[in-house]
Length: 260
Image 1 (cartoon, rainbow, N blue to C red):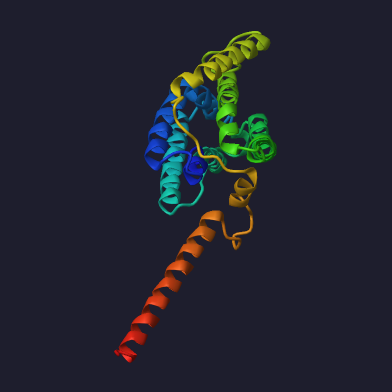
Image 2: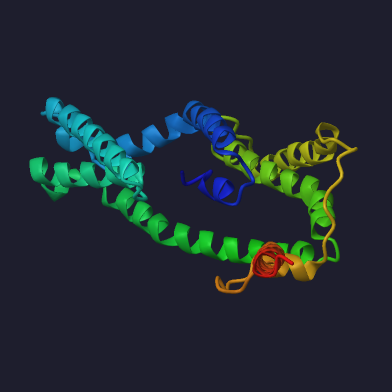
């Protein structure tokens, strides 16, 4: 829901396509970067040496943390409440380790890094979303023909997205490349190749609707009470139909009242 919810809400993807794409990439993410996450959870939160004499306790902590996170995630999803399974696992492990073996069982340095990411990541996401939204409004929504402009910019946006995704794999993922500059260059090459090849998969004969930027801005207006272009047309059609029906009824009544 976190990754495809906005795409479905904006009607960029249908619900079926979003489920298929989400399932595919969730599986790919688990296979490609799953070991890195597992390594962090197994060594970055709990000090394993503190459970050297009681390994069964550590196994129980891990099992209960995963089970508890799965139950809470299922319940939150069932009721439509946003949830983070990762935070559920981490907090469960911290609480259970404290209850069973005390503060010395925690890796404070690893927890400090995780706490910092919990603070930095939403702020970085908010800033990135604001900048991207501003760029799209300035270069696409306010263009004379927003739809045609969006189609023209699509290869660039696709290439940039692929480049960022590849960086997560080439910098520290299973496809890690050293030095980092070489990883950056390889990611940019893959992103550029994907962006350049993207038009090959599009229907060049497809015609896109043309409308001025003023209508596009009106459609994304923050005023929910302001009628859109479609609403205005619908209102005019309804008003015309109502007037016609009223005139016909008046004529019929007049004819019955004056049969001669």
